View 1 (cartoon, rainbow, N blue to C red):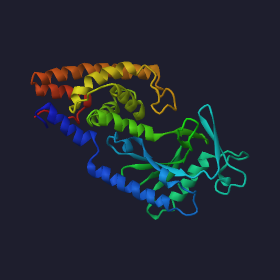
View 2 (view 1 turned 120 degrees about the horizontal axis):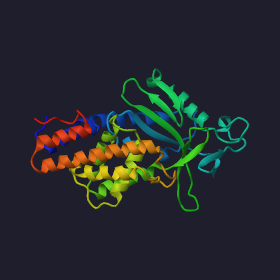
View 3 (view 1 turned 90 degrees about the vertical axis):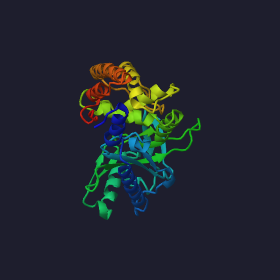
Length: 328
């Protein structure tokens, strides 16, 4: 219950849009404990411990409830392995006589098999006493650890950290889900969020999270969370202000999404190219919903300006659903 639009949004953010501090703290503690266990594995790959990295929306602080996955990249030492890139696919060559990775090559080839590496992670995680009764499996590029004691799963991605290329750039190389490898760089994603959010007074994170909540409702086709986040960050990259009151940001942002969803969205890391792989039908339906909700949000803002808080709150409930506080 709320009697002003501001109080309604504050309750909505606290109760439904943002992770609680206790849940975030518990998740970080369990993640750090797991990382310690992996670092202490015996009879395992040599680890490049200083290059392990947390990634994904939880690490970027853009995750909304339910907290269902936590992503960690575990860096291994290459021990002389080399790689070549061909049309976005990375092929890692294992040197003859390499005891570390010799048993993890593609059958009949010298290329390192990422599936076999992930499967080794799966088997080692099963040796941890606390995880012995958990569901542990390979899921494309990650070893997935599903703990019965928590709401979330851990996606543990093995990786290599490259030396500098001719342009002075370094990358992380992770499994591509097809047995080989691909480039990524979560440092850039995390830094981009931090830079834009900091420049705009720390107000962008709440906007990202509330728009993820808007999109998560079963009222339109679903785009990837990373695509939506990239679109929102593209919008704010050229802005000079972002209000602390998220409702003031929503109309223009919905209008932006309704148009930009039809266009290519370039990977901000400069690796994948266009990440907007939605079909035209999906784009059309998302745009249609954004246009409709943009109109309602403008009406809600006008009602608040006229001190008609009940009317405004009821309009916002049309956009965000019944979890948005009622007027009282």
